[in-house]
Image 1 (cartoon, rainbow, N blue to C red):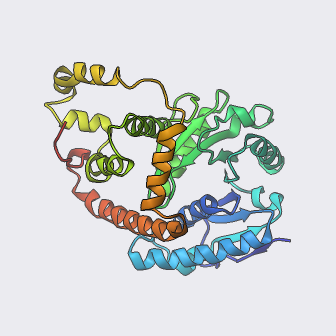
Image 2 (image 1 turned 120 degrees about the vertical axis):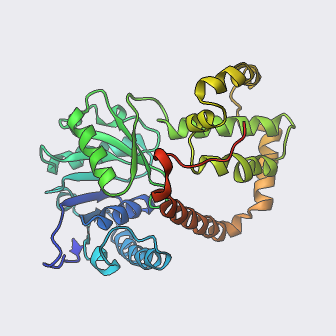
Length: 337
């Protein structure tokens, strides 16, 4: 049975969005879309999950207003009124201009869910997945509406980390790519397009490259896990919060050509020593697990996550405040090689 909250007549809808899955990512997408005035219908097979989602969304809207990070011009009450929930897939999908699937990272499950979604979609509906690594062709090839399918992978937590990777399959229509990017920009996210399917997309490929070398530094006895983390929190992360790697290269010399002339051969020499990808076993495994558990006790993870999220909120607010001061479309970065 479906349950819903009606949208006030004085609050015209910009259209309907269907969210499939009421977990953390589904709730985050809901907050993002309602901030721009879209009606959102959340689907889940568990009524208790839907009830929990409504309570959590209400709580988050209040906290966002308190922190000054509530998006859009609508009040928390107006945004909450745009949300409805249902355990009926037909109700969630019918009339939606965009469907955002947020079920667990399981290829077989996504195949099943998309097969059900397409039964109730129309020719104008974009069928979108939040998958973090599975290329869309893996779970859309069998669909009649496969040309309408695409991936929009958010960064967790999406409300504070606005990047979204758009990943089309070989048969995704160009208009679907364009419409998805336009919608994401409209609701305040920062979309990037992965031009062709590649395992892990871009974010996780870059993240895994960092994890691999961080692991090797520990496995080879070069650094402790704690000190590797500090390389990012007090070093690289400071720059990367505002500048990407190509921008850092360009600013840390007299342009990119100058940087590569100075450091290109050094980069080649150092990276040639990286060695094969680690297996995440053995002594290094024991060292990393022991160090992590000592510094971040398992029974304190929720408390530590709240500490992390509070700092992400502060960083998001800082970036928002600094954005109007951005000279020539760039943010100033600290110098260094």
